[in-house]
Length: 384
Image (cartoon, rainbow, N blue to C red; front, side, top):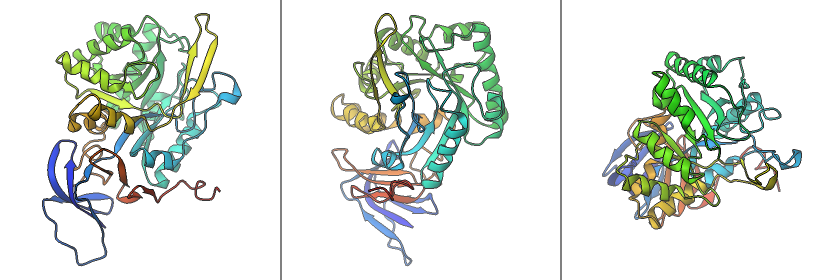
């Protein structure tokens, strides 16, 4: 059992100074005063500290991504400690450009390992390409029968995309939608967005020509260029969800984009942020040749929260929602994830008033305490 005393609690809405009792991996009780218990219980005195839900990062290449500069540029696999030190307690793994040497099978194995090591992990089937690589032979069956699979990944409007026909695009979206309905999952198609001029037009065309709900389409990297950013605001107006990549080199930050959305009178409840962790970033010349390549970490969400609040003056509750409750709602994981409520999973973060991360609780277990990492991945513990 764990008792957190006198924390300034953001659920992510502000609840004031509260005590929070954790038992059997769940938030058992939230109250202005919980008396000391007559049983073994770790107590954290959090006076002056901020307690929030754990971050949900819905876009992480947990098995490594990229590889677009030949084999030596394949990015490394994620380690558990990277998630903990970044405040990420729930992660959604996915494949990227490389759907050949990186497969749904080894992605599923890594997701299973992360679940065993103490965080919550889900995955998307598919990759950039089409036909989509899958576990069972079809995206629909993956979504239907594999608990950890929430939806499908596909790339559009990118020189690395499969450039599928509109007919196939609509068929895929319809299939994913139905599989989600039958399995009680969100049934989403997460769309890697590139820099091509077509932008979000395939989505808008699909919405014009069919009755597929806008919420099925989940474009990500929407802040990668000005044209795409403006189309993203249009998609928000149509009821869609958009995802900003945190700390994308040379592009507007998520905080800047959210501020612009608020200035336009748009609700932020359908805006989410993710890290694109362990994916490669790359720059290309006009002739398509690779100029430079690097690898992204998973610290982007943590640093983006600080920037949103301290630089862009976004209220903490609003900034947090884009990393917690909005993501949970969008993925069908709430109220178990993304909130501090009685009965929700005990995924919790403690910050200083300056938003420096102190402690991390995942599924009720203390993973970092007072800035000291106390839980590592299986082989991290044995490396020296």
